[in-house]
Structure formats: structure tokens, C-alpha cells
Image (cartoon, rainbow, N blue to C red):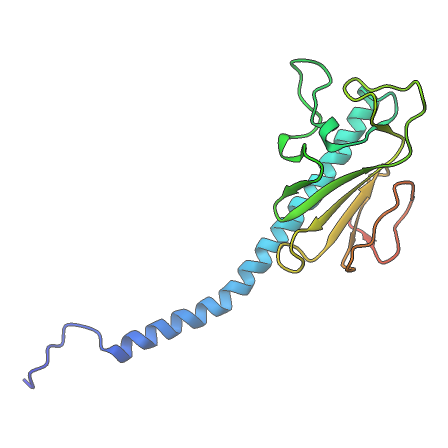
Length: 178
């Protein structure tokens, strides 16, 4: 024997293993980030759908044909002991959820004499809900918006194109997703 033990790895072998792990990580991380961003966008779209459903329920059961003017109002139950119209993670206005900021904007005020069961002062005839990424190109690359028509629109414009609360149809520089 030449005096060396053959029971371990050499420094060169360990460096090669570390380099291979680094290359694999460099390939995997961008894909992981895209998957996270896609999940955030799906959550933003899901939040808009939930708010559209909540507004429709509010309008038919509680708002006399008018809509809630704030997310906070949708988070209040219509009667003591009953369920709210939306989940508690969307009840602040604006709400931060999964890398997106969700905000509701009330449109024209409801006619006088129309009152809601839990928010008599903030009823509106129209509404607009937006979902914008908290960090552009990191938490999401698309902005989303919807109104009382129920169609969800997407835009990659910066700043995002706003859908007017009274508008019917797609705003400029946007496309419907459903």
C-alpha cells in the first residue's frame, strides 16, 4: 500500500457533486417560481369568482337588487348566527391573499330608500373588483378585474387597465378569461 486509506471521497469528487446539485437547482428554481406564480394567479381568479357569487347572493337575498359597497359588508352575516357572504380571508378592503391585492370599488349609489340587511349606507348599483399582483412579475404577471356582469378579465398592462364599474364588455388591453 502507498499509505493512503481508500475509505472516503476526495475533495474533487465532493466539488463535482456540489456543482451537479447547483446545476439541477438552477434548472428547477425558475420552474418552481412559475408554478408558484401560476398558483397565485389561480387564487386571484378564484377570489374574484367568490366575490361575484357573494355579490349575487347579497343582491338577491339582502340588498333589494343592489350590491354591497365593500368587502367588509360582504363579510358580515345577514342575520345573527348565519354565515357571511364571503370567507374571512377576504373581509378587509383591500385584502391581501396569495400574492394578490383584492379590492372592491362601489359604483353608483343605490336609490334612496333601498337598504341592505347589514350595511344600509354602502349599497351600490354596480361594483368593480380588481386583483393585482403585490410584486409584479414575482407574485403574478397578470392583473384581473370583474364587475356585476360576472365576466373576469385579464390584463398584462402596467399599470393595469381598470374596468369601469358601469362598463359592459371587455376594457381596452384586456381579454376575458372565461
